[in-house]
Image 1: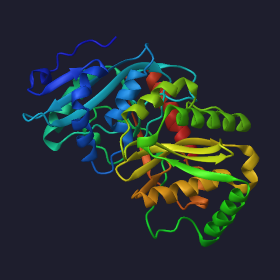
Image 2 (image 1 turned 90 degrees about the vertical axis):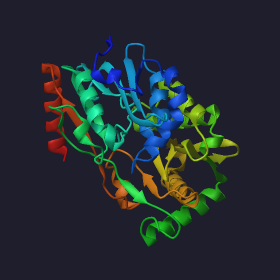
Image 3 (image 1 turned 135 degrees about the vertical axis):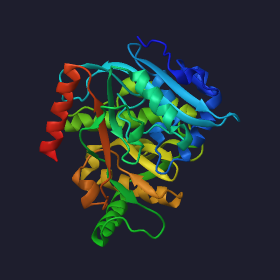
Length: 358
C-alpha cells in the first residue's frame, strides 16, 4: 500500500498529492497547457492518458499524482506515479514491486517525462527522491529529451528502444517514387473491389469505432498467431480516452469499409501536430492488394492535410517503417533504480537482451 508522505514539499503553497483521479478534474486544463508547453511532448503524458489509465487500473495497483501550482493557480509541475507489482518486461517470467510513471505500464505508453517548469526542478527532484525512498523505480520508456536530472540518485539508463518517426506535411513525399506509384495502383485496385476509406477524428470517435478497431486487431493477431495488450480487456481504458477527446486531441482512426462492413483500421492519437500510430488490423483477404500498407499511407496523407507534422510509429524497428515509408530513428530510454535482488536481476537481463539485439 502507498503510505502518506511527510516530504517537506507538503508544506509548500500550491502543492498537493492527489490519491483519487476525481480530485484532479479542476486541474486537467492546466495540466494539458503545461504539457503542451514542453517541446516534443506526447499524448502519453497528458491527463487524458494518465487519468484514463488510473481510472481503468486493476484494483491491485495504487497510484497518486503530485501537482505543484503557482499563486495564480497555474499548474507548474506534475508527477504521476503508480506503485505496482508486475513484470519489468513481458520476456521476464517473474514480477517485481516498483514505482513507475502512471500510465506507462500495461498500455505501453512511449515518450515519458515529468512536465516541470524550470523553477520547480529542485522541489520536484527532492520530492521524487524522498517519495520513492528505498523502493525499486522503473521507468520503461522515457523521452530522450526529458530532464533525467529529476530522477533520484542511482537511477540508470539501461537501454534504448527504437521509436521511428516520419516528417510529413503538404508537398512532402512519403517513400520513394516507385512506392508512391505502387500505392496509387493499390488504391485503384481496392476502389475497384468496393473498398472506401473513412477518417474518424477525435471529435467523432465513438465506442462503436473502438470496438471495430479492437475486433479487426484481434482477427489480425489470430492470423499471425500472436497476441498484444491491445485487446477487449483494455476496452474501458480506450473508452475513457474517447470521452476526454476534443478537436485535435485524442483517439483517431482511419477505417476501410466494404458494403458497410469494416475490413481494416489504423488507430492512434492526435496531439500537438503529431499522430502517434498505436495499433490496428485488417482483413487478410486483402493482403494481395496491400491493404495494411495502403491504410497507413492514407492515414499519413489525411493527417498531413489536417496540419500534422510528425507521424510517430512508436516503439518497434519493423522493416516496413523504413523500407516503405522512410522513417527515421528516434529512441526512448528505459531507466531503472534497483533496490531488490529481483529488480537487479531483471535489469541485468534486459540490459543483456538489448545489448545482444542492438
